[in-house]
Length: 472
Image (cartoon, rainbow, N blue to C red):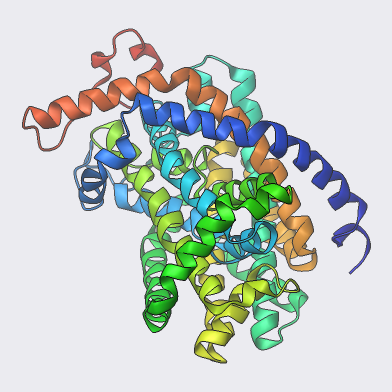
């Protein structure tokens, strides 16, 4: 395909040039610096409170008795957005572009970035607002009411809507169509039409319907995929030590330094890791805000766990499948086709078909999960329902079809550009506001130590900012 939609078209060339500057000189350093800062300030909350994170998944305690979204349902919405093409196609792209060592940097950004996810999600809970039948919140709200920067809040709301309802949707659609064409020979335009119809039916159902669908859909698809990976790893258990060796040697190898590819490998791993786990973008904070919990820290901990679930579990499954198969050395394969060919070599002809069906479930849940973030932020920008209808059309029809027809390189370039913009904007805000999240964590821990099984928070506990807080 040539012209506007192609990998060598003017649009992709222009955006790729901007991405090289944005990611090479700015974002990687800022992401790592912030993740380290939050890890230190929270005293490694992502490591010392893993048990509490797991326990909270089954916590049914609510602040009210109304029919709000539960903590687990909010967790499922964020996982629905996280668990998608980043886990199957994104990991494959990272290996194809950056080599096996890129996986190591995906792990590092997940381990450190989960502290970032905790901070942004706790702040989103603190500054959430009540709406009809649910809560609403996210970075735009803590920028507006915490930082008192209306212009930044509105900028972020526009950027995240463009990122998730347009750029990321096209990536999900592109990957589904590529997988279906590889496995079943279905033409991308035909698959695009099917996706348009299916996604529109779900999107016009609203946030609560999406939450209900995700809470059932996501755990099932994730369990099946992990089980397949476990079976493949068990079949090749003798090769597992060599896989870790390949990853570590490539992450710190002399060849990478001498060849000048170390920076590209590290950057690729971090980019694809951020796309997959979203820690620092602020998107998970939007999902966190809709949960009805008795203390903001509860959902902060749950969202930190979702980063581990996404990158350390599901992304690692894909990485092991690809590396154990050895097909990553074929430089003609990239994206979802690399994952499909890896499974073809491991489990036979059923492999590509399984990946096609898995990517449909993973990526489609991301399409409807991504729309959730757009709807929240459109409601922040305006009360006019016409704009909400416009975003639904752009999300469910225009960008789904664009992704079906555009090249893989173009949709990923668009995703990287918008991902960089929203991440820089959000990181500035949470660096400024993180002391409030740290205070809330200390309050939560002190209540637990005092023997309170389900800690509670009331805005009177923070008298200096209680006028900024509505839902508590």
